[in-house]
Image (cartoon, rainbow, N blue to C red; front, side, top):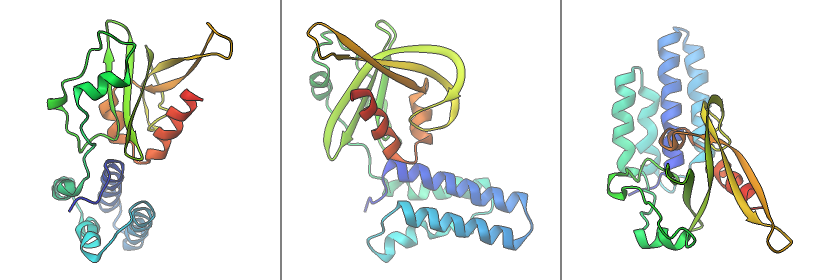
Length: 211
């Protein structure tokens, strides 16, 4: 049964890498034990287990010693990942009613177990679209995205990567006026999703855009 969210899945990937790095970089068992304890604490803090079977599913992470073993482990737990609920094309169009000629991504090519949010870029309009679910409700935000051709910190996933500026326009208090909100996010949304292990960061980002 699926019980791991995509962001938790990405968290587990990071923890598996930590354990492998500990084995390859240190021969001191105390150091390895300390890393494993930190990983255990992180997993218990971020993942709510409902039964012993779920705990046992992730238990092999503590036996990892090589990169190959880590990759096999990640593939082993992937069937337990709750996929992002795929929206229909009609649902996406309803999220952005002002965009009459909305260009949609190829939904059939997306691995829904690998994303916490759906995003695509329309090079014709320079608009970037972000679609997500909050408490089961499908929501979306879109804005003008400027590729800055520079490396910075992504507001969503907090990784050091190529970023661009997303600016979202919002109606002002006076009729006919607009205010703009923006921040720096990854150019590569797939890589951003892979690095996103705390979904609250994403929710905070979109909330700030809308406030």
